[in-house]
Image 1 (cartoon, rainbow, N blue to C red):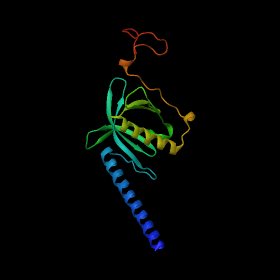
Image 2 (cartoon, one colour):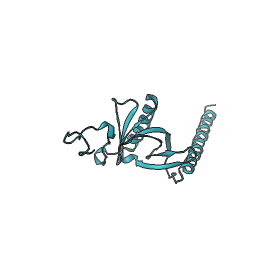
Image 3 (tube, helix red, strand yellow):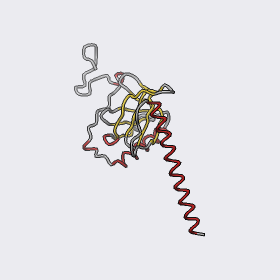
Image 4 (cartoon, rainbow, N blue to C red):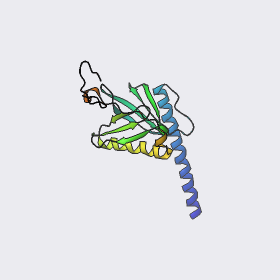
Amino acid sequence: MGRAYDMLLATTEDVTLELNRARQKDEMQQLEKKWNMTLAKPGRILVREGNLTKVSRKSNIRYTFVLFNDMLMYGSDTGTSAQLHRMLDLSHMQIAALPDRRNAFQILAEKSFVVVASDAEERDAWFREIQAQLDRLGSDPEAQRLAAVWKQDSAATKCHLCTNTFNVVRRR
């Protein structure tokens, strides 16, 4: 009886694994069609997809973000198609919490920026899942070249180096 149960359990695990692989393959094909690019590669797994607002220099822009186990990409989504804006290699990336900004966190990479989620639960889920992939990859923060995060023009009233106030002559 115990042997039959073990065989049934092993078969169930195999079927579940194959169903998950088929689901991943289908999701990857749908993403490739939507983004009009090749995304599948050996070992790449889709972790999460959703919308976040990227805080840009002049305005806030809502993008679709796609997290894989090795990269994060984002771009404009029209519903039926998506236009890539940037791909970030997770092995050269860090994230940082922003306790003073509601529902936001920083993405630090060759292009660094702040993203804002629609609520704290979504922010925490994105942060947790990105951090899990970064931890899995075991990147070396000291060897990374991270860009500074831009402040929005409206938030910068004076130079952060010399503290002179911006005006018509002294520009941002």
